[in-house]
Every structure is written in structure tokens, then in C-alpha cells.
Length: 187
Image (cartoon, rainbow, N blue to C red; front, side, top):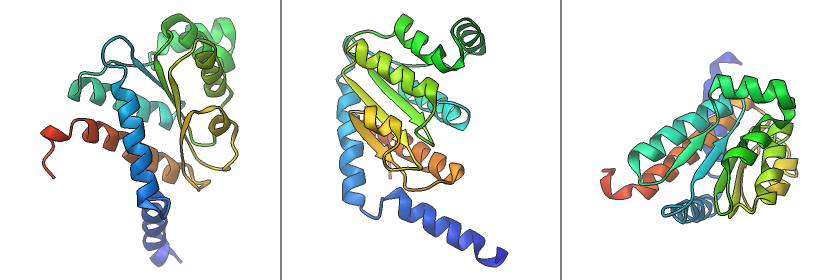
């Protein structure tokens, strides 16, 4: 059993990375890239997540700012998280951050492996209220998860294994940066 674990793991990861349909995945990634480029002049991208998804969000925010002319904000500063969670409850801290820092026309990228994280869902609802131009979701687990229902553009992984979902989310998000910045990438 252990002998085949890695073979099976990587086969599943590779199959899911492309939804078994690379044309659909590539089409969605191009659509997201185009939407992010619309923020260039007067708006920004805000990206949020919890735990491993927060680490992915931070990596994306740093790299997209460094490698493109886009502005991206990630709410991973511990003082902000603990202040807003303490004052408004953990389920509302990202909602309050969106309320304070978001504006009409911004783009929200929301990552939740399960698609059920209350604080991420509440942030999306606040972004809708503030008339963000787009809410892009990255989720996994159930195909009808709550986060996916809120998003205007959704990337979904058909797995209930956190590390598989998070690896695919990270690959997709970082490929968006390289796609936007393709003139400087040698493949």
C-alpha cells in the first residue's frame, strides 16, 4: 500500500490540476488574468484565506506586486487579524477588513479549501455589498459549497484532501502571475 501511495497521490494531483479538461482550466485562468488586469489603473486586488490558504494568498500578493504593475493586498498581518477578530468575532474579521480597505471596482480573490469558512464567506458578501467588480473563488470539497455559490468566477478542485486542494490552488494562482507576466518568462 505504501509503495503505491506516491504514485496514486501524484496521479490524482495531476488529474485534478486539469479537471481532466485542460481547455476549461486554461480558459478560466485566462479569464481571471484578464479580470485582474482591469484593476491596473484605479483599483486593487484583495486576496484572503485561512491557514495554508492564507500562506498561498500571501505568496500570490507578493509575487503579483513584484512581477506585474498590479496592486494586491493580503490581510495576513497578525495585529490586524487579532484586533478585528477580538472586536468583531473571528467570523467577521475579513468582512471588516473588506469594509475598511475595499472599494467599488476592486477584485476579491477568496480561497477556502472547504468552501465553508464563515469569515471568507462573510468577506465575499461584504465585497458584493461594496460592488467589487469580481469575486474570484478557489475552493474544493463539495461542488455546491457556499463559497462557490457566491463567486462570479470559480476555480474548484474535486477533492476533500486539504493538501491536494491547496497545491492545486497555489499552482493555478502562481500560473496566473506568470501568464500576466509572460513576456519575461522563458519556458
